[in-house]
Length: 161
Image (cartoon, rainbow, N blue to C red; front, side):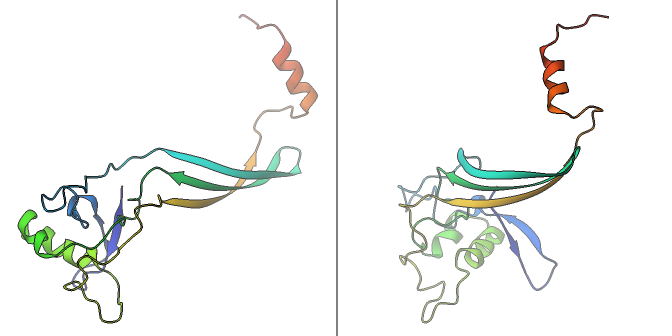
């Protein structure tokens, strides 16, 4: 789910779901080509990893994954800014205020939320992707850890009790 931490200066930080705020006009009649996006997407994980055994039954490992997505809305940014007037027309007053404050988070010279309408916010021709790194510490719980013993156990006929 796409969320952003919000500092309202009057209350502690909290998570806000961005999809229902339609920050790029998704689902608004004024922007018919911008459809609501789904909160779940397919990904293609591509990566590598390594394990280093420092004892027979203990290891440390690392994995690096690049995840290619089929959406441009992981960060709720894809196309252009919309006119903030439409937030008031389509959302409740509380959500409209939140959408106005979250749709434009930049401090670009000469640009404010009121004159950013139509300016590029993201690149819809490039889908999102992200990396993750995992460091693992593991140990084997079974008694015999030699590769020959494990292979022999796998090749035996099943035992019935």
